[in-house]
Length: 172
Length: 428
Image (cartoon, rainbow over all chains, first blue to last red; front, side, top):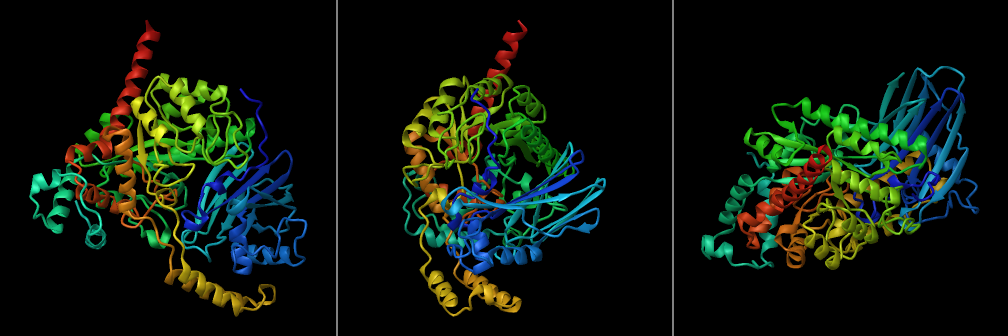
């Protein structure tokens, strides 16, 4: 077998939709990980860059914000957080986490370029509940599907959130 | 059987039919040259009712993990994007379906593998639960004959599949775990390379130059157990490696003809001929990008350009101004939607595959809830329009039966027969 690789959170789900112009299936991926031994909650959000540009500057091909690039506009992250605060939240044990981006990176190429965002929070309390709202891009596309993978220690679950079901609470 | 959407669909097809003369004479022979459109549609619906219809690829388990989503309730695809539920399968006369549990490729290490396995099992369990919760409407199926038996009982057959071999991880024993869960085909790879195989669409290019050594072992294990091998999404090299290694025929559960629509996800003439020579089947998918080159949308583009030309810089907009701009753009997109591929374009692919590979090597895998859905076959309630178009082009009932399920069931039987032979041999 070939040497196994740590494929650095490749954007795979996002290239699920191969032809963006066809707008066949609108997807984003959110991965939430809580490891009690590390006492840390990590959120990875992966969004098509075209969709981000459409949401923020009303043009999927307008790269003036240059998110995740060396030339990123000074106001770009603020605009992105403003948008996310309207459509996305995580509540751990009932407390909403303040969105603060730890890192941004781009994966893929062309229309399939994905913007990956990482949020990380120390969490000393035992996790008893997670409430997730992920309605990103439901203002753009009626059929936007936001897949959420939640890994809490050894327990893995998946959810699909969308316009009609934007939020869900998991109890542990 | 009810066909609530039939009237509109038939109207669309009536208009479209004017440019497409039948390619065969059988319909004229059977019905006479004076058959009206209404008579043709009625005849097609009778055929649709008689043959066993089977869709080999739906990503509906993704819907089933939506909190509160109920497969027994009819959903509006234009409201929610959902393309399959049990009421719409009944409306469309769709007798059987493979629901594919899909897990996105992620980190390829032990932790990533184990999470992928857990997520796949969760989706499979959701599929099983949805079938068990609707015992009067559907039944779980694991063998080719199950679909036939369930149809006799007036029920739809629900088969389980897995799209992407990632949840197998690096442990060959997991193939049997998934078989025991009811999985009857596995798509080796998805949109990027995994530990089994190279994808046709990974932007990084090939990693294994086909199947990996572990992928070869997985193929053999699928042969041993009686799981169909799905090469949709796989690179061309993976296709040929799989053909060379598999002792049973293979399938492409949702792929089209590359000569008709140039796309890496579609199959070349050589691949179509090769899969036929080895007894396999290509299941045509209703995904616009694989059915035709995307047409432009100049009216929408002009309207959007005009709206953008008059807007303030987005960073200076108030929330109200942003909301108003979004509404304007949404209204333009609704007024000038991107045109979808048509059922005629889909059947053009069927015609082509039949001409290259033969009538015994083509089927249907719509890819509903995974991007599939075209004009006239937008969701499960409209699949009868494929049959109407096939009848219009002169396909006989026997041929339509092969396309809708006969060819796939033949492969399914051969795959399971091989597994039985191997089990008998091992026992001796």
